[in-house]
Image (cartoon, rainbow, N blue to C red; front, side):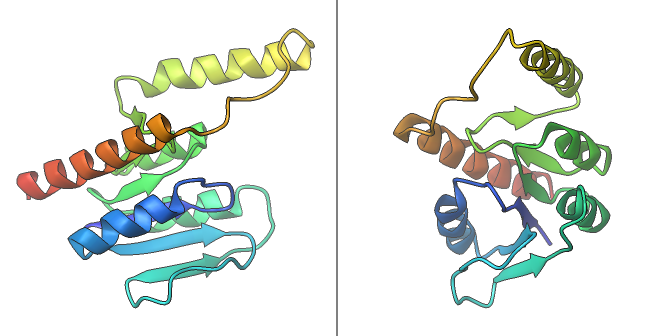
Length: 150
């Protein structure tokens, strides 16, 4: 059964995930290092993991199944989940695929080096309505494509 896993600690699109999951009657598991408020619905669960390095990522990678959906901005986690045949979407609606994950990982590493050298400062721009809309479209599209394939 299709399941949505959310790397929840810094996920800005949780309300959108709840809305889409409710429409399709899908289970959602949020994985976080600390407690957070979640809807009081039987299909939404919060899994609290240790504060250890990558504990949430490890939990998701160990529990994800083929055709599940993972929502994360963590590129190494996205790569791990793709190896398990899961579908992975970033919080801005960008879908991670086997075809693009290599270049995304390389860009991430390059940007980390540039930040370390002081060449690049700051982070990504804040989420806007277009990002949220793009995320909703991507999530809806992935769910529909998985359902058609089953």
